[in-house]
Image (cartoon, rainbow, N blue to C red; front, side, top):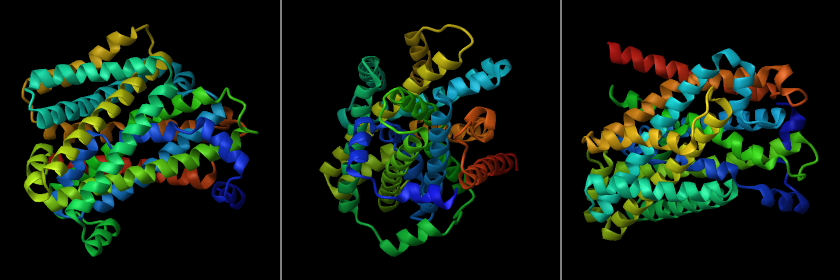
Length: 409
């Protein structure tokens, strides 16, 4: 990134620019729902078993997410089309393989999100598993119908959910308190406190740098590119990059707050145990806020994952699949596993590990395409951003390989 482009990124906006940005703001904040989803809750609460020592993983994962989402913004403005469509055009012979891999990531994501909804409904309202699953599916379908009437409507709903989650965790952290010296030490010192903690680090990365968010962010931006609000593509890319940084900083703070709550309540680190522990520790109101916020996070994140699957199917599927057929098939594994009695927290954590393992298969094509002049044309990826993106992809691969080696040994 040159000095001039860096100056463009940090220069204060004019009043006219603010007005134009307000008209199209929202994609990054809508996508940030995926960074505070039930998968994040499960991994962050479980990481709280080791006090604040894994807080650095939350910070690292958030920075990695900012980098890859910024690359997506740049590539989308350069091509004028969604990430899924760009990948399909670049490698047509691998179209069906790409579709299966990316849809597999969406299924793993929906598995975590829907599990969070069911767990929240069971904890707050006392429903049994079957009733909670049916009600959760009905609520998600309702939100999806809202999305059918335009992505802007669903963006507003998703941003509202992010606001609710943020306010809820301001309240939770205020109630449980925080030890600042330990907080800063945990955020800055990369420590693996126990052998089992490494899987949580990989899970945190998988829960934060989520593959489906790359496709969703690109689709949200494409919807706005036909509006004459920017003088050139470079200006638009800069604005959306700024929005991405702000939205994901907020998501990072929420994730840190979840880990703080997990560290204070201690225990096994499961969502159910956290809910039951927080009531005698901080009061019934804190437990209720915890449960309701979990439901909101699950509903919002499951909606975004399903919409991302719609985008992938529309732009990449080698055959025609009806939208609602695909949505039902995506939710079916989650419903089946939950009804079968699989432990919810284990389901959440290992689904995030699966996402971390799939992430390099999406990051590598993203970085390759963003580096090709015949693809990006007059809007090449800045050299610094490309270098950091490559390091991010290598880190993902290194963590995945280390986890697999640890499992084998």
